[in-house]
Length: 302
Image (cartoon, rainbow, N blue to C red; front, side):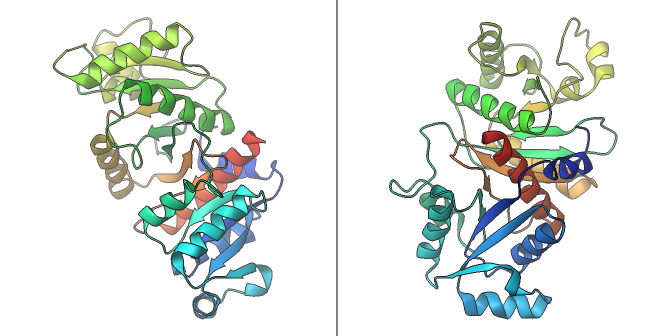
């Protein structure tokens, strides 16, 4: 799969999915939900203050007759209700609306109705970048802050599952750092080497992992050749970029989104169902793409 158009086409092969929106009285989110329905990507259950939802819907010309609305004026209770709908399989995916991320994530981890599985949760961003013949998966740019090597192994496996759902049978994972040489003073290089060995031993499955690589080596075959990297399955051909920590990840994500015309979508995985966790600063297109991505991941989890 080389672009988001391919991903959107893949949605049509899936059974129709339903998104539970937590605190749905948010104009950009309602616009994205409406677009997703019109494109036959997914239906939605809107959980939140019905009067505020109706006010926004009237403003943007959205016909609410096409949507199920669950009234709950309290943001915490509305978020828990949306999570519960997914927990009870009345919806396939969960989407964050006008609710603080802290409350949203706390509800996902609720012991009674949450989506916890005991697995590592992680965030995957999927980019369609002009000039590349494939989708590029970034992880983790928004959830895990400073993961240790064990966390990173699980983050890689999560990203591989997202890549599988997008049609990449054996994703190539580049564990990136500032340099491509192991340096004990640079923990990211040590972790990358350890992850490479674990993959060779079969401890990290469903993908090919190599590193440490600088970012240019991961993405450019020309750079890899120039730096003398030979006999590599990943160098210059990486599908997944494993970032060392949230600082690197978040900066890279925002650099791409604000300086290029790339399309992207994001999903939180490691949960019992995919979670659409976008930033308020993310574009309308990103929100729609994220719903599509979650639908494809949900289909693959069946």
